[in-house]
Amino acid sequence: MQEVAQWVSDHLGFLPPQAIVLIISMLPLIELRGGIPMARLLMLPLPQAILFSVIGNIIPIPFILLFIDKIFDWLRPTRLFGGFVKKLEERALNKSGNVAKAEFWGLVLFVGIPLPGTGGWTGALIASLLKIDLKKASAAILLGIAIAATIMSLISYGVFRM
Image 1 (spheres, rainbow, N blue to C red):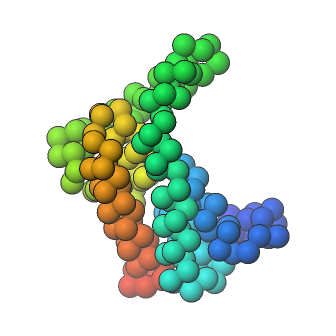
Image 2 (cartoon, one colour):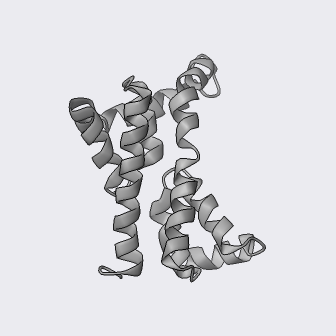
């Protein structure tokens, strides 16, 4: 993790630490699971770490929920992106088993438990592919992000610090 912090410092050092955490938390696969530990490495206080990580994690979610179907429909027939879209859809649907069964709580747990391949981005993609109601999906993803932020804060700043 120190290498990552050094790379960030070398390439994004012109930005304030809060902006770095926000940007990292917006990235797919990394999200706040990387944002909060990075905030710790950048010596941000815990309230700022949570605030900027959660905001960064939330920013892409409405766009995914509202537009990913249209974007995929537009990209699917192209040679350049068709295979990529198909793989993304298959990957998301392969992870959607418990979400499809339990919808709201399945989505909360999928987003909230910080494991590789889970999180807000994939949760929003799954919700969109499964046609889960927008309000229900949004609430579940926000609750999941809050749970993930709590877990990552405890790991990075508190009880389970490594």
